[in-house]
Amino acid sequence: MQNVLSKKARDKFTLEGKTYEYYSLQTLEDEGYDIKNLPYSIKVLLESVLRQYDGRVIKVEHIRNLANWIKEHNKEAEVPFKPARVILQDFTGVPSVVDLATMRDALYNVGKAENKDDKSLNSLLDKINPEVQVDLVIDHSVQVDFYGSAEALEANMKLEFERNKERYQFLSWAQKAFDNFGVVPPATGIIHQVNLEYLAQVVLSKEGKEGILVYPDSLVGTDSHTTMINGLGVLGWGVGGIEAEAGMLGQPSYFPVPEVVGVKFTGLLSAGATATDLALRVT
Image 1: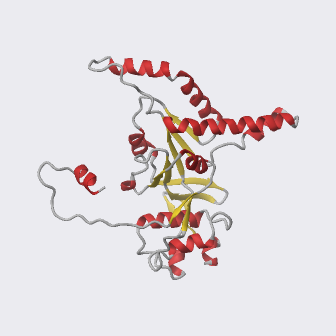
Image 2: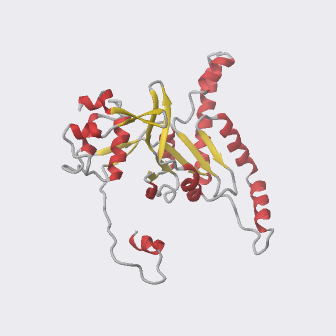
Image 3: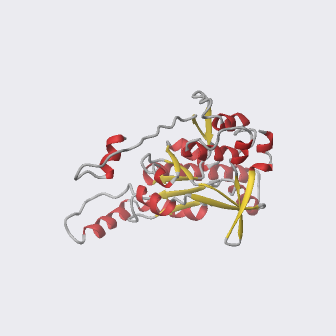
């Protein structure tokens, strides 16, 4: 395992003239673990803990528990999951952003009490920023006051902006004030659709001192349905506001090593039945 935790786990490939680095699960296979037969979802979790191993929060046993999933599924063991990004909707997301702003206020007051100059104060405030990409989609504020006419959409949007002026001004400020924080404006689409069609990347990349690192997309979100886009290969969980904030600040969410249930469909759908009907029936 020590060989895996050294830089030997980090491999590279070249595509269109660019060199990319990634964390190879093959190094665990070479250590005797049955990696090739792991479910894809477990592989994504395993890559996550391998890549983010620090010996303090994510430890050797966390990697071992997932790598050994086939031979010994320890249901009592925990997985520290650090998502690649966080998605919020405005109903539950605004309080999380307020918490970030409040933390900045607290640091500002501490700095002022210590008579720090403006440059030092700004440096202090920069410590409060999301560590991963956070997207807040505004889609829970609309109310239907008008309907049945061509002007209904515009009339409802106008009222929405009037009713939520202060909230929207705050979110506009937050988008400029915080790094790694974006806001998807009203009337763009519902959060499920926006996440699926625009925000989900499947593979993410990050430039660092040692090159461009690529790794699987993953997320937590304050809307449970939104994170369920695993057909794209993006692993996600619906969480509460506190867990979402923890993810924003680079802290893990903990859950038991998951079971994986495989489903195989045979035969044909009856006339009039759709794939959606089948999915709803099974789930």
